[in-house]
Image 1 (cartoon, rainbow, N blue to C red):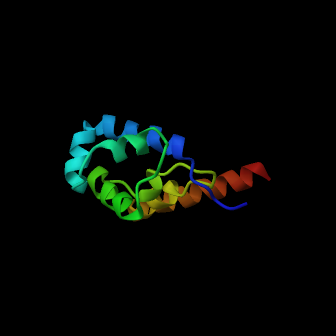
Image 2: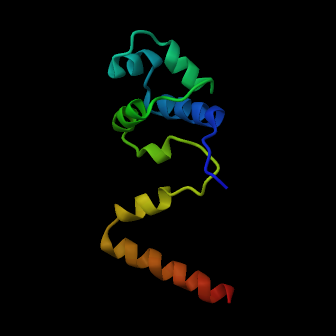
Image 3: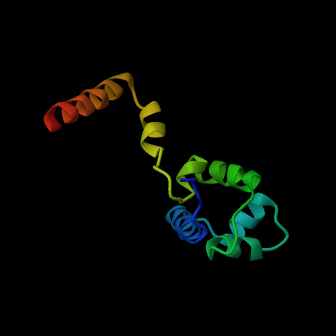
Length: 106
């Protein structure tokens, strides 16, 4: 199955991210240097998606990877991204717990 983006869910998710960070539609407009806020409302309502350039910029503004902003039908990869940014000790503990789960399930 081809991975597809769910525009409605992505719009709701973008709104949650903005709300959690206290970022307004006007803030996004100014940050992206857009002529009006209409396109942002279209994203938030699930009518359209930001361009890849705008997603890249929003990623910087929100301080999260693009994949963490977009909702779709593929398996999330956030856990792998987070794991890469953890300390070596935490990575070892994560690997150990995964191996333990495999052994316990067998």
